[in-house]
Every structure is written in structure tokens, then in C-alpha cells.
Image (cartoon, rainbow, N blue to C red; front, side):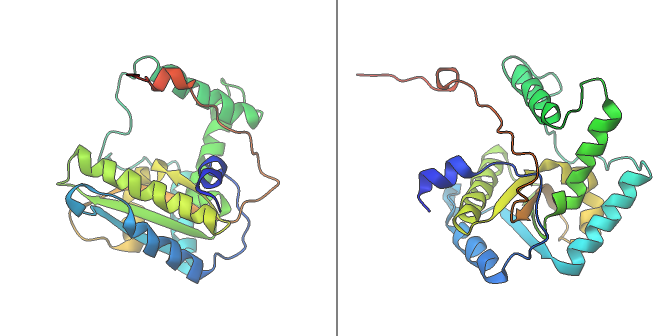
Length: 221
């Protein structure tokens, strides 16, 4: 697959079939993704690939927490600034309108929005998932490295005909994830990632992007 096609076809898919993800494809992707850039080659990510019974168990435990209204775990990092300024505030709001509007959920129906959001912890039906950690002693530059690693993974998945959805939502249940994965002390769960074959019947409404002149400035000589 051409790299431009991989980039433009990559999106956050929120509906997967139960078709198993070939283990060899997953190994190719994750082996190749180690080529992702990182400052001074620190490679500060620590990832876990989860399929089969362990993933089913995790989904079950997370689903039980959702069903009982169990409070989220204490946050280990700040997902968004507490006072999100313009234009980021408007972009986030527009995303919510696009996401829930496509599902026919009005802004005021908070219960329906919560039900839709709870699909995160079933990995949207995906049969494979990746959980990415970073050492809590790392700084902002290393968190950036982790982002480049995850983007590399997502683009390589497209080359295998697979889709994905990166989910910071899993950090809200990081203790439950740790029950399954038993990560070493000192690691922070940044996000999960659902991986699988797209369910063609699920919503495919594309998320808009800001005009290029809002995020790029050309300085010509």
C-alpha cells in the first residue's frame, strides 16, 4: 500500500468484525514499528499485544466496572488541559458533534453518549488490542516518541488490511488493565488500541480536519 493511501485511509474505526487478526501480521507490524524514531534512540514505549482469552477477560472485567458504575481510576496523566483554549476547544466540540451526531445522539442525551462511549472498553468488538506504556520518569519529548511509535503501528496495520482505534479511554481503567498484564512498577498506561478488520456496517463518518492555513505557515525565500 502506498504511504499516502495508508495515511489517508487510516482513521479511528469504532466497529470491528470478530475475524481473528493473523498472528504473523501482528508480529510483522510490531517488529517493523520498532523502526519508529525516538530521541537518542531511547525507544521509551513498552507495548503489550493482547488477543484471545486474556483480551476477553479484560473486556469482561472492564464491562463489569462500567455496568456497576464503578468510578474511574485516579488519573496518571492529564489527558487535556483543564481549560482548553481556542481553537482547540472548538475542535474538540466539533468532534463530539460529529461523533455523536453520526450515531443520532443529541447533545443533551448524556445517557446515550455514555452508552456509546462504553464501547471503548469492549474494544468496539475488535479481536486484538495493543496497550502502550511509558516509564513515568520520562518527559514530554519521550511522550512524543511514543506518539510516533503508535502512528507507525497504525500505518503499518493499514498495509496489512487492518484498522485500528487508539484509545486513551483505557487509561481510565488502568488498574484493571494491570490485573491482566502485570506491567512492571514505574510504567504508566498511555493508551490502548483496538485492532482488527473493519465492520462495514458500522458508522464511517469521517472526522473533519482544520484548514491547512490554521496549522501550517509557509515561509518562502
